[in-house]
Image (cartoon, rainbow, N blue to C red):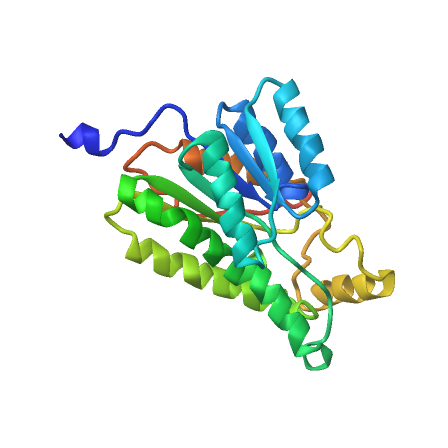
Length: 260
C-alpha cells in the first residue's frame, strides 16, 4: 500500500510556459530529450512551431499552442488542448514573464498592473487549471521560475521585483497548503542570465539599469549564465523521486577564476 501511494506513471507530460525563448525554450528541449512529453505555451506562435518541430526532429514528443497567461480564457483553452493532445498533465513549469524598465514614481499604474498580471496572476491561472487534477491524483509538480530580485531588489525594475517577491510568497504558501497531497511546489531562482528579456529596451534605459546594478552592489562580477543551467535544475526537480522535495534551487553564475 505504501509503495502504491508513491507510484507515478512512466509517461509524465509537462507544460512549459514562456517556452518561445530563453529558459523556457531550453527547458523544453532538455525535458523532451529526457523523455518527457512537453506541451509548450507562449504568445509567439511562430517560435512555438519551430521549437515543436525541433523537438520532434530530435525524437521527442511535443505540442505547442498559443498561450497568454494574462487571460483566463486563454489559459483554460490551452489547458483543454494540452490534455486532449497528451493526456493528464503531471507537471507545470511556469516561466512566462514580462519586464520593462522604469522609475517607480514615474511609471503608469496600468503598466505595473500588466506586469503583475503576467508575473504573478498568470501563474495562479495555471495553478487553477492544472493543480486541482494533480491533487485529485495525489501527485504532480509545479515549478515556478523566480529571480534573484525576489531577495535582492533591483532599482528601475520595480514591477518585476514586486512580481517575483509576490510569486515566491504564493509558492511558499502553496508548499504549506499542499503538504501531504503528493503535489510538490518548487522554486527555481536564477541569478543574472542572458536572455531576450530586455533586448527590446532603449539602449540608454538599459545602460541606466545596468549601471545601477553596479552602484548598489548587485554586479560583483561580469559573468552571466546561459539558460541551460536553469533547465538542468528544472529537470533535476522533476526527476527527483517521490518522497524528495527540492523546494528552492538558486542558480547563480560563478565569478571569474582569479589568477594566483
